[in-house]
Every structure is written in C-alpha cells, then in structure tokens.
Image 1 (cartoon, rainbow, N blue to C red):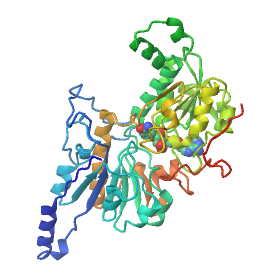
Image 2 (cartoon, rainbow, N blue to C red; image 1 turned 45 degrees about the vertical axis):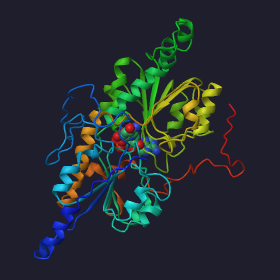
Image 3 (tube, rainbow, N blue to C red; image 1 turned 135 degrees about the vertical axis):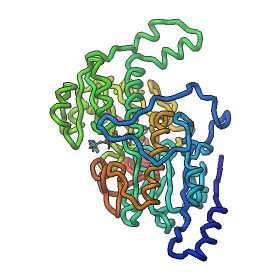
Image 4 (cartoon, rainbow, N blue to C red; image 1 turned 120 degrees about the horizontal axis):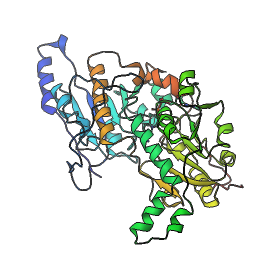
Amino acid sequence: MLNFKIKSLQACRACIARSQFFHSSLRPCDKILCVLYPDPSSGYPPQYARDDIPRIYKYPDGQLTPTPEALDFDPGQLLGCVSGALGLKKFLESKGHDLLVTADKDGPGCEFEHLLKEAHYVVSQPFYPAYLTRERIQNSPNLKASITAGVGSDHVDLEAAMEHNVDVCEVTYCNSISVSEHVVMMILALARNYIPSYEIVSHGGWNIADCAQRAYDIEGMKVGTVAAGRIGQAVLKRLHPFDCELHYCDRHRLPKNIEERYNLTYWHDWRDMVSHMDVVTLNCPLHPETEHMINAETIKLFKRGAYLVNTARGKLCDKLVIRQALEQGQLAGYAGDVWFPQPPAEDHPWRHMPWHAMTPHISGTTLSAQTRYAAGTREILECYFNNKPIREEYQIVTNGQLAGTGAHSYSKGNATNGSEDAVGIDPHNPQGETVIRL
Ligand code: NAD
C-alpha cells in the first residue's frame, strides 16, 4: 500500500526550543492526519489534459466558495492523492505543524489507525473514506476534529463524535454541482443505452437493433429526486430543459418560487413518489433514517423498468436487492459511484450485475471540485488554528451536538458506518442473500 509521510520535526523542535523562553506564547504543534487515495498508477504529477479551470467565486445560493488566507497550489492540480496532500504541505509546515499523509487505511493495525492515536485533526475524502468508528474515536485522546474534504460525513460515527466532543465538519457545496452533472450524465447513459452501445462499437460491432432495443428519450419521463438539497436541486435545475416531469421529496419543502420555476411536484413520502417515476435519483445523506431505504420491500414500490441513480451513498441500497431487481427486470438500469465499503471487494455484486453504469467514487473529485475542497479544508484548519468560528454551513457536529448542515440534513441514532452491513442481515440467512418476489 502506498504510504507517504511528511513530518516537520525541525519545526517541532523549534517550538520546543522557543518554549524554554516564551512559555506564555507556546503554541503546541498539532498533528494533522490526511488519509488520501493513492497516486495515479502512471506517477505524480499527471500529464494534465487542460491548462486551466473556470474560476467559480459563488455557489448558486450566494454562498462564497472557500476563502482561505492563501493557496499553495494551482487550481486544477490533482490534490486528493497522497502526493497532492490537499495542497497543505507548505502551509502546515510554515505554521510548525506535523502533516501525516497515508493511503493505508483499512483493516486492524493499518497506518491510519496507528497514526490516529496521536492526531489532533483527521482529514479524509468520502471517495476513499477513513472510517472513523467508535472504537477508533475512543482510542484517539487528542482528536479535536474530523474534517471531510468533500461532502458527506457518514464515514464518521457521529454519535461517538458527539459523545467524545470531536467536531465534524465538511466543505459544504464544494462538489454538489460536480455530482449533479454526474447524475444527469448517468440518467442519460442508462436511458439511452449508452454504455452497451459504446461496448458494441468498441468491439467492432454495428448491430443497430442491439443498441436500439433498450434505448429511450428522457423527454416526458417522470423524474423524482429523493432529497432536494444542494445536489437534488441542481439535478432538477439541469433536467428542466430536457422537458421531463420533475418531482421531489425532502424533509424540508422548497420555497414556492422554486417549485414554480421548475414546475415541481412535491411528495411528502418518497415511497408514494417512486411508484409513479420513470427515473429515481437518491440525493440524501446516509444516516439512520435512510440506511437501506431501498430494500426487498421498497423495491416492489418502483414502476417496472425504472432507472435508479444513486450518487449519494452505497448503503442507501441493499446491494443484493439491486442486483436481483436488474436481473429480474424490475429496474431497467442502475448507476452511481458510491459503494460500501470503499474500495469494494473484487467480487462486489455491483461490478458484474446487468444494465449497470457504475463508476468508482469519482463524481465529487473532479479537478474542479478538488480545488474547492482543498481550499475549504485549509479554510477550516485556519479557523481552528486562529480560534475563529467555522462557517455554519460547514458544521456537522460542533461541541457535542449536530449543528449547521448536520442539524439540517442528518438525524441522531446509531450509525453503522465502517461496519459490515448491519441492516438487512437476516439471522436465518446469514449469507445475506435477499430474495425478491415481484
Ligand atoms: P445537502 O445537505 O444540501 O442536502 C441533503 C438533503 O437531504 C437535505 O435537503 C435534507 O433535508 C435531505 N434529507 C435528509 N434526510 C432525508 C430523508 N430521510 N428524506 C428526504 N430528504 C432527506 O447535501 P448535498 O450537497 O445535496 O449532498 C447530499 C448527499 O450526497 C451527501 O450527504 C453525500 O452523502 C452525497 N454526496 C456524494 C458525493 C459523491 O461524490 N458521490 C459528493 C457530495 C455529496
């Protein structure tokens, strides 16, 4: 496993030396542990396909994109991998902190677990999550905060974080638009039978009927999003020009002017909505209310031949139920980029099921998104180092309570993050095989 460490020991020694003379101004070095995905197999840095990225200063709701004091990287650089180190190296070293970077995150005794015991801050991306379980939190006495370089903090046991007063924050909105583009791409890819048609032509074929027999327009289709937060709303906005009929459900109803602008139909309960939909897209966080919401019972509510796109979290769905629904024709296609666990095993059923358009977890880690979440991670660290408040929308858990976006979008309860699928395991069927009777 690729592993890379940056330790500014000299800086630490400098602090210790200073402390002998200036006790009152002593600021101990913090250890910032970043768990990042391995470098590209062709080496780092990559050959970039483009020379720049558009500058985005504001999100659609008017919130500013991250505002750190400075940046030590060029926008568009690959930052989410070990050598990219989220562009934090120079900044943290200049402040005399230790930056520890590892990709070795899985299994007991992994380097992440070992380094965590001393860390003050842990930073991880949902694409390559460092599962911060209750046990790991209990064994990390110095831990002040878990920072998600991205959006979605279900890899942290939020209950345990609240109990142990570990803050949890994320760079809210940094990649919500990136994901919404992926959702639209996947809806079109499934309905238009894009991937099988691509494979046919790549393998030298030209049977038009083989391609066309499963290809449809989405014009006029009923599309429903489960949750209309930042991603869900961006999906609705992007699908509006396709002349689809748009539906949504959410705990929080949207303002009337937005419903009218996109001609939206609101559903109080997503279970009632899905039976009418040609396309369903899941855009809610994973929390106790939503875990395995798509299971052997609820899949029967879907219209036969519906497409399901899930870029939210793998554990929203029972993996075997999805496979069987595709095999039996209840779903015409399933696409997404989120799995459980991540990385998934080589024999994970979603790698080989029919009519899928799965990717690894990539929709929120475009180079465009990385620029924002690396800058946002630095902004959050600067707030901690300078004792300044963190933007409310970045907060998931603060001072032992759900706060900010955490209070808006998550629920309290026992999380099952980091553990094997806890819901849906039938003691009479320990292999977890789920039988759907349609
Ligand atoms: P958001 O906080 O803006 O929106 C979440 C919405 O979900 C809120 O409006 C909330 O009210 C709603 N919600 C929560 N529980 C619900 C329930 N039980 N029923 C109906 N609605 C419910 O977050 P967002 O930026 O839109 O992101 C949503 C999720 O998408 C994240 O939590 C994360 O899991 C996932 N995500 C994935 C990627 C990726 O790369 N694939 C990137 C970013 C986010």
